[in-house]
Length: 123
Image (cartoon, rainbow, N blue to C red; front, side):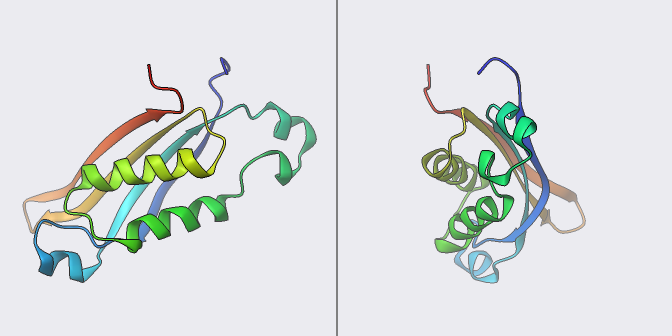
């Protein structure tokens, strides 16, 4: 794919068992996700049919399963797990996942986060 097409999902809020301490992970606070999901969108653009693209609800279900399905100590680990799950489940050439944890240090920091880009065929 050379087009540069991508599905963008921004500002997704999802509860996650995320934090270095066990107490923090038990709180299951929301994290903010932004996704860039690279794939050829021309077939969907021509047909105007959902069958020719990816249903956002299916993507959200994967995000929810990964974020809530196990504990994550680091935002880096959560981002890696989300990227791997999306590449395994859907036909994307590459995914970019941004994970932001709101208020990781009360009163000092608005968000802390990471952004990772993973491709189907690394190299």
